[in-house]
Image (cartoon, rainbow, N blue to C red):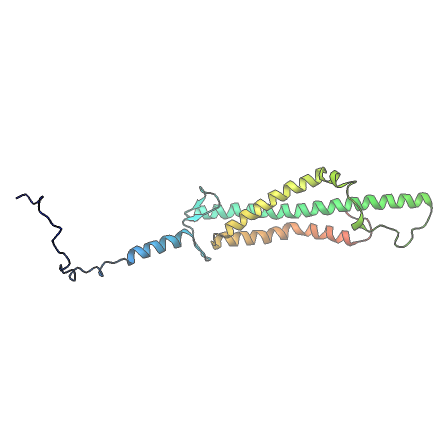
Length: 208
């Protein structure tokens, strides 16, 4: 029998009983739990210890084993030490630059007084902060020392931001490595900066 020509438009389906069709037993909890676990594993927003699926600052750098975590911590240790050394080295270079000018200024001051034969009058020396390190602003921008300081500053900031991104992984193995390395770097390298700063406070031209 061919029912293709039968008109179904007048058939009323509103009286069909759908009460026996139970959709409440469909379990959506597993799907929701999987989504929550996937999001939680993708980006942890709390401190944790873990050695699996730890995404570092480069796409190909993913930690998935204790051995890889140890190697990553070793790399961070060396990079952080270098960052502290670079920071202290820049500060020392600036201090030595000021010291060299201070010594030069003292030598010229003493030479001019010895030629004139006049004793030094109290307050006759121009304060160090008012003396110029270069004849002009343009000459200072062309200074090789200032260019070196600027380039090293860019490198220092880049490393600093990379270490900050590593810390934002919230992995405590990595975070503790960065913190410990920074403290060790300060302990090893910062003492000379303290000595140079102390020499700058003295009134004698003993900056070395």
